Length: 94
Image (tube, rainbow, N blue to C red):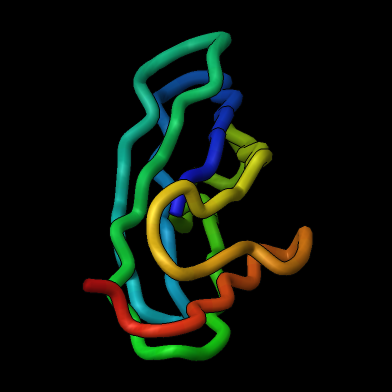
């Protein structure tokens, strides 16, 4: 599952987390400026629907903002079904 992520930070580098349902998948520190980066989450899951969510780590909410766009599945048996970031997996991967 891929997403294009942009983070605008005022003072210090921001940290964000990526969740699948309520499970923490990744925590990153944003150190770039004025660019989108491609975030990849490798998800091996049973068939079903999963919510993908990105959020800033507590304490960073006042100094930064996140933009997520172009969520997509390029490899594997699934697709993003809505703008809220719901991943639908059709069958188990090989």
